[in-house]
Image (tube, rainbow, N blue to C red; front, side, top):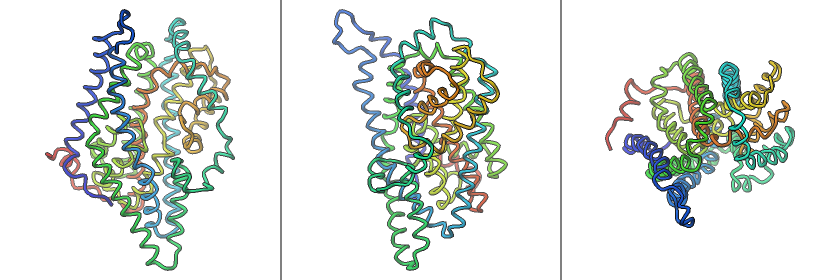
Length: 449
């Protein structure tokens, strides 16, 4: 589908990890070395320096990579749908993809709930810390409550998937509407009787996909600088105090994400995908690095597609359909986090959740991974909806907002890994998986620029 990754890939991965380390060091060191000066309140302290001068670099990188997301998703999904040819085949692959996404999401939430009940992170937060966190982040909790109140109902959400003006949907970046229209357009192209005309349209959008990948290659040259700036800003803004006060909760979420990624995905890729987990994780490393730094599955999509096709042997036909769909509707990491967060908040406020209530969490968060995918800030909004349904105080959201940005980096990495795992499984089930020769992924990673 796209030009080869070329020689930037190896050095890029190394530079990204180095940039992450430097970002943490800068985010911790500058505020400590240059604290606020009471005698000169207008002077920039270390944290303000990071926010004013470094954060815009990270924001620029995010804007550049998001710039290609809409045209890439639309073009690649249209080509992928049209290239499947038979609408029955499309329906079969679509059902497999959605079905696997729902199963892995339900497993993720279950893992989160089991860990949260076993570790009891909410029982370890003292009253003073709880009051401090709620006071510090009460505004964010109020915004989540307002957003939840504005959230459309289930029927309205389903109807909203169908765009009334596809051009407006493209301009707004409404991913569910874009996906629906691209798939509908692709199906229509398979039914056009004049194959020459249909092939011309498919060829055009295939060219658009290639061009967007080239743009991504250029933008990715800035990745180390953007990653450094984003990590430094996150650390400087939130500091380590909040993280330490919520350390057990954060470790519980991290352990759940790690367990889901290594256990569920490894087993699924090995048993259903016929691929060694080591080959899989080596091949997906570049996409994981970008996902961790940017906290956006959609923004990571170009790299995920590249890794799936070049390193894992997933056919373009499958990757161009499964991965754009997954970047919007598959949120295993987010769902797991919601399970842990709900139990954590219930424990802090002294609520004992029954088995039925915890099953409600599984059902709501699983369905939300599809139905609420187009809502901005879906993680916090869905969490507010779950808390409201269970009768838990929405103020509890304020307890976790301080570490949400850092945990978001981790759960986005899991989301992207899940997308790639499902692509491998679906490709193998359709006979469209051609794993590279042994050592191919290692060679790609170790080649010198």
